[in-house]
Length: 453
Image 1 (cartoon, rainbow, N blue to C red):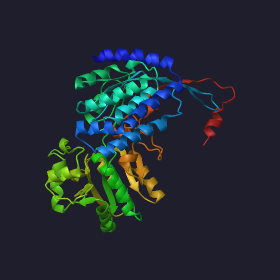
Image 2 (cartoon, helix red, strand yellow):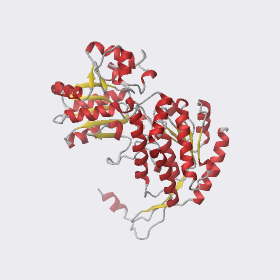
Image 3 (cartoon, one colour):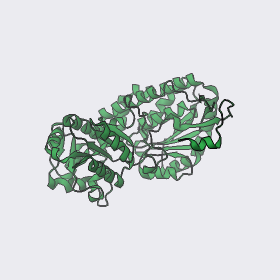
Image 4 (cartoon, rainbow, N blue to C red):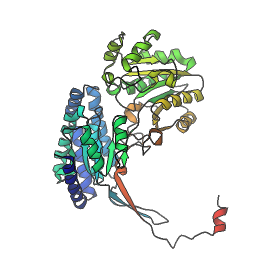
């Protein structure tokens, strides 16, 4: 089917859905769309690993389950149509309206949960959605969307409300982005830039390069396990995965012992260049063949030997920021580390590395000092600071941390994005505000206004 025909059908379906479904009916549809992925988490995870050759089956199962139930928990009971709010005092009335037809550009790294989450957000807000999957993950993405369509068809949802380009291409994706009302682009930076250049309002993501500060006087074994769990998750393809831990210099032995005990291999000094060459090209770009691959694959490519049961490889950086390529984002189970002499230096190191790549995305800290936590959040230019938890697993939202569950993490103007928060259903709403002059609000005099503090 031609893209323009898909758009035409989506617009008709969206109008019908908007007119026929009330809030309760919409919420039933949303629940069904999320639960079908939860119920088929194992099958869809296997399909994703087999088709893309990336990631870890067990981790993708967990991701399918956690994202689907987390999205549903976040959305249930949330009003997404009609009058949302009447402000006290002014009486300002806010009315929610759909944006229309949404394009969802999805990556090969998250070919199941990204379409699911974006479809659910669109359904919640009475929008239509057309998915443009990554060509390298089209089969599992198409299967996911077809399963969702079948699940929601039982509620009388129009057939063309949710669609997917079954044979994706750059040309079709660009045409889609030029014809829809809003674009949600999750994936490589080139695709995100293309979305912002489409001439349509767009929500994109920035590069990740999560810097992790290990504060003093913490349980290093507990912190090491959480950092390694985050870095190893799905073989490191998550953009919010830990990339560099920054530790107090006098505690180096204790820190390194904790990481080794929890499954990290700390590379020898003479292995530094071998690993950098395996992960990055001569130009400093990430080698595609290592993305989402196992720690054993990386070691073999680098020509080094690692102990059995190794979860991640740690390469000590030989400089900060541009002075060592290893300080950039590594979408595999490899990370780096740097020492600091005081907390201000730890923040400076994090900011320097982020200035090369990852500004605006995410940082993490393991600390028992609330003042230092607030200081890091205040001084590091990121949209989210994860505290005492695995970043890759919780930055995209958690039932326990207050961040909206999603697969699209806005990076603000720091990362050339339009939002600095987790993308969710509210970003697919237009809001009409009815403003009436209230006779109950007394207008102060000019003199009173200028005396106000």
